Length: 131
Image 1: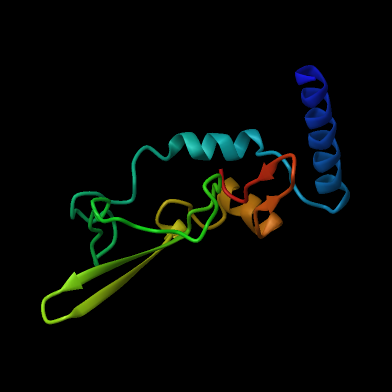
Image 2: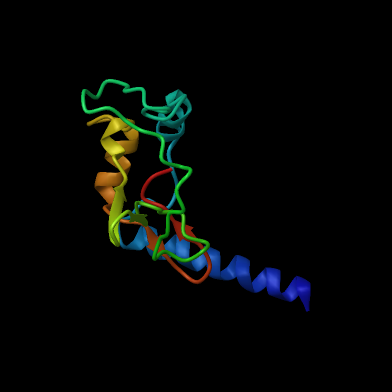
């Protein structure tokens, strides 16, 4: 039964890949996209240090962030966290991905994302907009 499941999954993946192409989408990342990705060596900024951004970037990874995305999602582009403050107040933080901090306009990654415009989720495979 296990081998049969693998064959069915491979067939579904093949169909999903073909459907992407038939609809004018790019199911795979090109060599240029992967080369761009390799050139990204570090996050945009960590530990309160700003990297090319005068507003600064703070490391808030110690907070208990939550996402509405599924556990297997590869697109965690928005997160929220609630902090209890003195006086029965609550601070709500919303984190939104700043892709422009790392992906430059006109780069291969940018062009791939512009072409597909979204991640595509199928039963057999996820085709992410960004690598």
